Length: 98
Image 1 (tube, rainbow, N blue to C red):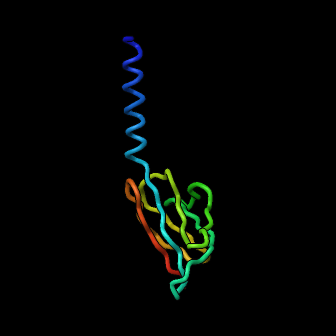
Image 2: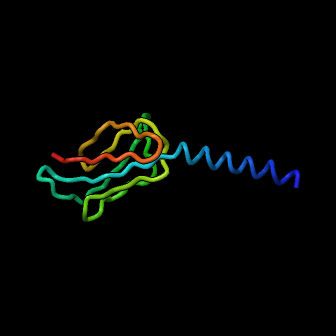
Image 3: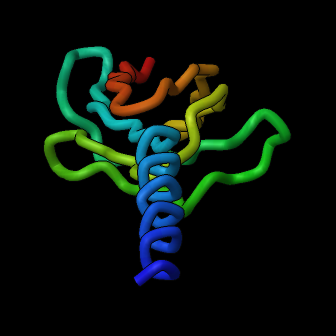
């Protein structure tokens, strides 16, 4: 029993730490007329490395990246790119293509 309690406390703390430091980026991509666009979305960290796998928006233009770290990213949508900051929790960022 004495060994189980410290292990349980460590597991709870680690879970809480990863949950607090987890982020999600989601939103909608539309064209200049406001119509949803099906397109590939890629996020890159400050060093230019890809974060996770690219996603393709659905027919409503929606995309989501789950379980990423909060921080500064470059989001490439088709041939356009934006620099953004993703905070802890959920960040919504919609993009309008030119």
